[in-house]
Length: 370
Image (cartoon, rainbow, N blue to C red):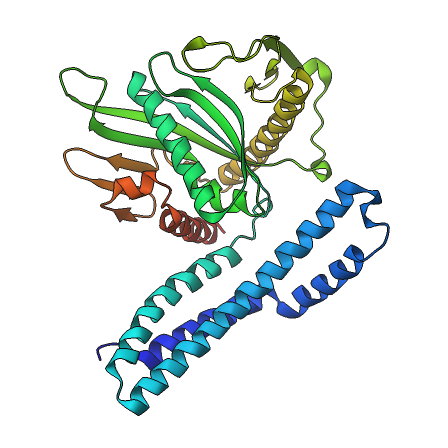
């Protein structure tokens, strides 16, 4: 066989050891023990919000531990399969082991990436906003394609999502859309998707069949928490209410329940219309506004540090990914160089490899800036 099984298995064990070192299994076991005691308290559900946090934290901790144990067990199993194949001269077992090694290497790589998410807000849930850019109706259609891509990615992983706002374009697609990915570390994963995305294709909206380039912007912010202390004075906010509407301007609400919130000092605007009441939309808008202001503050502080260091170059650049459907088929990340010749799969939510390479790229950039 051409595969060096011993070397491959040793590499997997080395990677798993680094994962265990980062996660700190002893600390994780203690955390699980403490949470189990809290969850067994007879008065736990007297405070539903607190109970939900405890049970969610316990579920996440158990999943983290079980995921590591499962990977370790799979490495042991494939090693046993290799030994059996060698002892019995069983080529079929060795072929099976080779296939499992390839799958296992990818799964462990994803687990390793997860341990790299140690940024200040990486463990938060995420709020994603997509806006159509230059390119007219093609850009609006592209924005809708990107929204579906991220929602399909979340669906593939079983991550719950909640659409907060959708502003439809007149002919097709979306002017903008905002949704939450309600799972821990969603921000850490999706923050590398932030930036300008570019689509090149034969426009389905051009009766002459010409190639069109269009753009859409993706913004990712962490969900705000009560401990963040982002207070906004009332006189810094302008709140307008209007009637929610759906595609083609069709009314989907008979009352002025939609909310447009403007932060006067910065000009940041947040619109919410997918909740049933004005109060709910206002609360959702305020939560997203706080998240954006929190991220803006962090970006401003980072820019000041870069300026003091003599480096004012933007870290992301104007375009971070190109999706080319004509004259050839390719999706390429312009920061990491990662690419694929299957745009259909990407638009159907298969973006894990782009996210993983982006996270590794972000870690490398942070090391360089240090």
